[in-house]
Image (cartoon, rainbow, N blue to C red; front, side, top):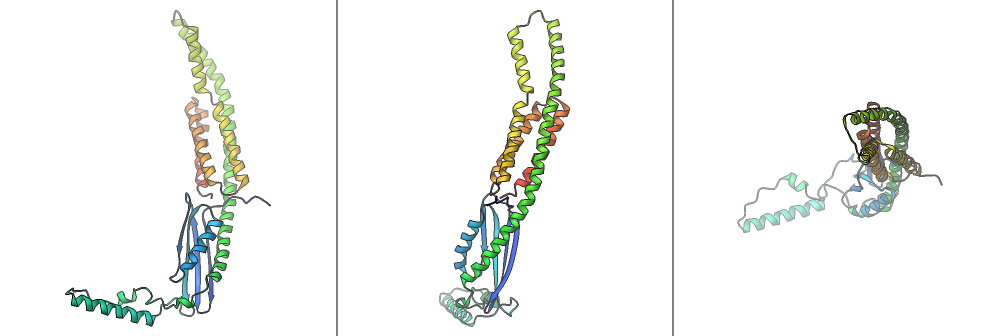
Length: 298
């Protein structure tokens, strides 16, 4: 069995169907998010569809803000609404009773409008809930819709993988350039340091050797970027391994981006050299560009 690959949190899928007196349309879209946020919009009378839908979505997805909507209409009405005579009669009777009680209590109510009556639940949906499509049939379509949605996420994830591997390759190149530049910088720094020490010794009668050794050690530590380079190499390999393993690794990659940025900042602060600083800034730019891509990885 091959690796599952990366998945993007950005995707879209739609479908249409129909049975008996009804037609319907599905629409599903997703964007990136810290966790899995599901928002369902279902027609009245199909509340029983929500639980199996959520279960199917939670099985297929781990992260992202996902919206799934189902629109239902009677076949041949082009989505037009129709009056439900039974519901209308009940609504009018209820309004009449409320108004009569209000008059008896001496309460002056505003006159009812037709728009108010039509807005009451059930009056204009024109659907007999007993004749609504079966949940099982709708779930069969929903499973196919979710599969298409996941397929698009995987396709987008493959594109993200190509981009991020290229960015990691660029980071590796910059890391080795930094190592080479740091070696060249060390030779120049050594010559300058010897010159500065000689100048100090000429103007000072006595210098404690222990104190001088301590100061030289501090200077060497502040300028040494060996640990930063080693950690950058380790982070690059860790990121490559995560991408190669596939699956929902977005959170881990995001954490690595923070570690990358920390090492690049330290490298720049220790640079003390224009060429090394330039490499550090290029590294930070590449890290920022990759982090933008990582935000979309599930």
